[in-house]
Image (tube, rainbow, N blue to C red; front, side):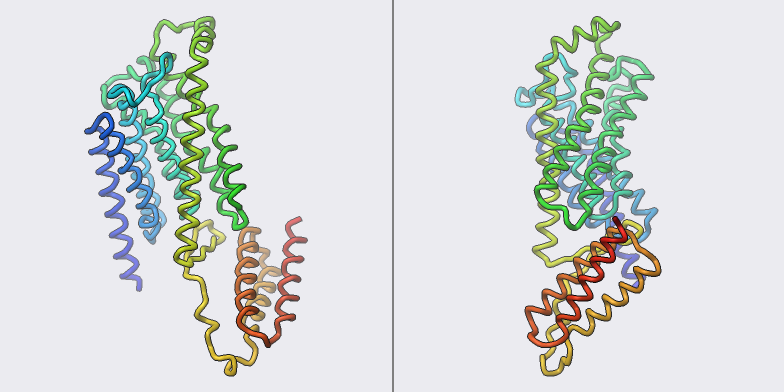
Length: 365
């Protein structure tokens, strides 16, 4: 079993390495419409690789794999900033830096959506590892010119944009992932949380774009000219806000939808351990298919399990998320038993479940 797990981890690591190398090598090659299609496909493949990388057993190796994938993904976003100059379809702004247009922003949103995907499919700590590589989009532009023209030749501005470009994806992980892992997180709450995160991170994104734009224009060298810049570029800034919010809300909601669709389609249940890792297993439906005549009390096993959890709760007092998951699991199993059997100690099981719910509600008030 250990050898099989190790082999699976090696294959997953190889996939991550190949995808990362492909992103870095291929993304700068194409321009125009074909360039956007290629970069979109590269990021899509990166997103599809997340469930594969999740299989790597060693946490340190998995963390490094996500870091490398993150660097390659944001390197691809950096390459997308060249698209603004390559064709009319990639409309750039009149006053804001030409590196930003709708499609480069859309690819940036796609990379940030992968951060959220990693956080909800695997663990937020791996999402942060991927997100910290956001600075790669700046590194790409510096590497392409072999100078600091992207930030007006100013090392202090370079340091600032490196920090801001990593901060935006990290904020998406922080603001969305924690709420998204809650089992009671409804579709409407997903939308509200995504929009809220979009507005909160938008301020940082506008600051990033403004710093890059002002750095590239040497004539903007005092506060009066900065005020003048904001006055003439207000239309561009509003358009920038719209592009950012639209693309991020769309891609993050797609991530939520795809994740739920796969879990429901393949009847997969997920549990979050106390360490924050996600464990997947097929929903247990086969265990209750014995003949009714052979089963004296079909509720006996779930009652034992609930009593064991109750004892564990009294001794160890586990965290709230684990308790909510356990209650959800008990409810699903109890509903299944009620639908299959018309005999047994159903009332005792329901009474015990209500008692556990009250104890947990009281403990976390």
